[in-house]
Image (tube, rainbow, N blue to C red; front, side, top):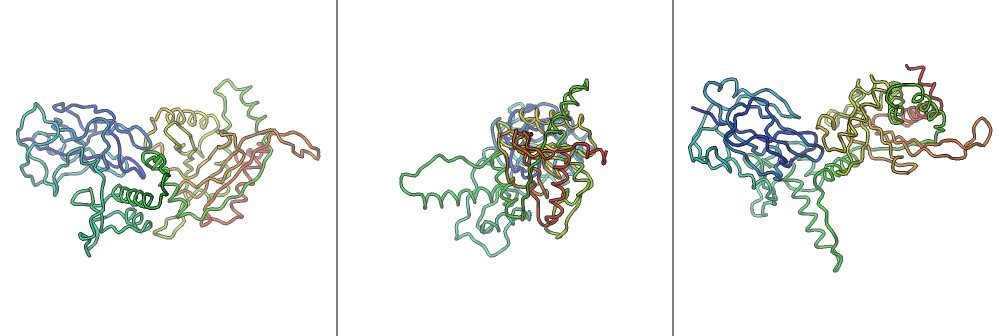
Length: 443
C-alpha cells in the first residue's frame, strides 16, 4: 500500500518568511525522483528551484502559480510505494537553508483526498503520516492573520517557539496571546506578527490622518519589506559610528589604467581593486570582520572574509556575497563581481549568494554622490563606503594641483572596537588608494 508524504515549503534563507509560486515543474500524477526540482518560487531575494526530498507519484499540488505561501505551508503530496518506503520515507537529507528531511512518523490514519488536485480526478482514499492538523487549502495561506478578540485573551503561554518572533513582538509592544497563529496547531509565525503590526499601523494611521490627506499606500512586502526589516533591526541593535577621510585616488586610477593596458585578459574593475585593498585592511584589523553574539554576549571574530557588495537592481537593493574574498586576486574578484551583478539584475541570485557576508563594500559613488553614512548590514560589524572619484583642487607635493579625489567612509559597530581601530583601518585603506604600492607589503 502506498504512503502519502506531505512536502512543505522549506526555509529558503535568512529573514524570508514566504515565497510566491512562479512555475510548477511537475504535474499531478507525474513520477518524481528524490531531490528533483518540483517548483520554482520567487522570494524577496531570488528565484529558487525547490527540490522534493521524496520520490514517488505526485498526488496533489497546493497553490496556483502566483500564489504566495508562507514557510511551512504544504507544497505537494507524494505517494511512495511499499518497495521504496524505507529509503524514500527517510528523505534525502538534502538541506536548503535551515531545512532538512527526516523520517516521518510511523503511525498513519485515513483521510479524505480533498486536496485541490487529484491524480486521474478520482476520489480514492490514501494514507498519510499522522499530523495534528488538517492540510490547509492553498488559498488559506493568503488570508490575513488577525488579532484574537480581547475576550479570547488567555493567561497561558503564547504558542510560539521562535525567539526572533518573541523579540519582534516585544520590541513593538505586541501581546502574542492576542494573535491567532497560522502555523501547525496554531503556532504563531513571524508572518503572523508582521501582519498584526501592519494592521495596527494601518488602524493608527486611519485614526491620526487629517481629513483630505489620503495618499498612496505601498505595502512593505517582498524585497522592500526584507530590506526595511533588516535595516530597522540594524538601527535598533547596533550602536554604530562613522568616520571618513578624503583620499587622492589619482595613482590608483593610473595603476588600473596600466594594468588594463598591458594585460591580455579581462579588464580589472575599480571595485575589484577596492575589494583587494579592503581585504588587506581586514587582515591588519580583523576586529572589523566579526559580529556580536547578543545572547552569549560575545564578539565572534571570523577567519574568512565573505565580502558583500551593494547592488541596485530593478527589484531593489540586494547585497550579493563574494565567498573567500581574502583568497582572491584582482582578476578573480573582477570576474566574481561581474557574475554576481549579472545574476542580481536577472533576479537569479540564490539564497546562498545573498547570505553569510562578514563585511560589506558599498560603492555609492555610482549614484553621483560624494559621501554617505550607510547603515550596517546586520549582523556584520562594519561597512566601507566609497564616493564618486572626481577632479578637485588638492595639494600634491607642496603644490596646488587638480587630482582625482574620493571620499571614503567607515561605519562600524562600536561594540567590537573603538575609534582607534576604525581609524587605523580607514587610514590604511586611504594610504593604499593614494599609493597602491603600499599593498605590495602584504602580497
